[in-house]
Length: 292
Image 1: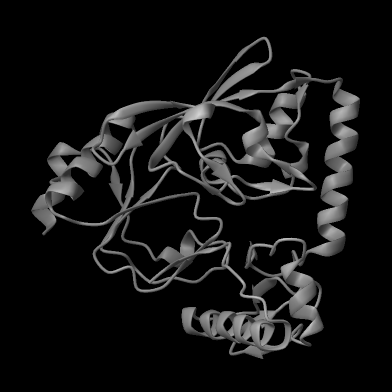
Image 2: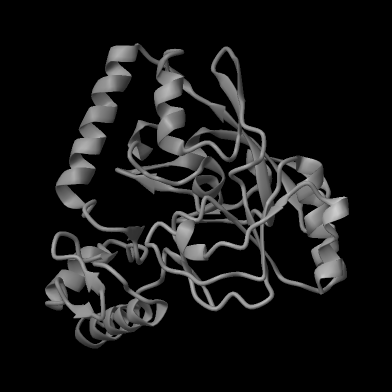
């Protein structure tokens, strides 16, 4: 199988390290095919070769909200070594998808461009935030997207306009590896952007657990309700299995207290789903992505 990805044909790094090193919750084993392409052409080659070998492709980007189990022979692609830049023309910014969203927001502040402050403090890369239509405080990243460029499932580059993408709650119709995003941002004074960033981050730190590794919100909020509130009302905050714990600060966060395993986290997820359904009659839907 190694001949599928002949090192002479690729400049990508085929990582032999554990997925734990790339996971925000610090859980994961070694993967057979974990790539960090260094160019778009390299990315396309990986996708084409994986398709020929009939291997499932998983764009994991920055892996900020992914729980890794046994990934088998899936082809995982990280975006960390792809070229990184942005280009500004008036209020339109074209940016590579591997920028950390929080760092990007700070960078745009220097140019008096804002709008995405509601995502300040989120550890996701732009590509992942776009793919899941990240949002908070009543806003969504899709509100600012003009177009997205992807490498599609056939390894070809393709531009999708905003109207060609179906955006819904924490979900999009994008099928491919996002490489560029065009945002239409708001002209704003630096001091106003700084104040909004400070306020958003303060709110996050007051509500969310940042003292242990986690994947952020485990479940999507049901319509007209909040997953964290439902979990708290089921008296599950602080429940621990192995080294995985439902945060006592926020019921929708599972934290790693040390050496939590995939099974520890999945056991808590099943407990949360079952208890909320049993006591509230509501089926919780995962917001994190589970690969197993």
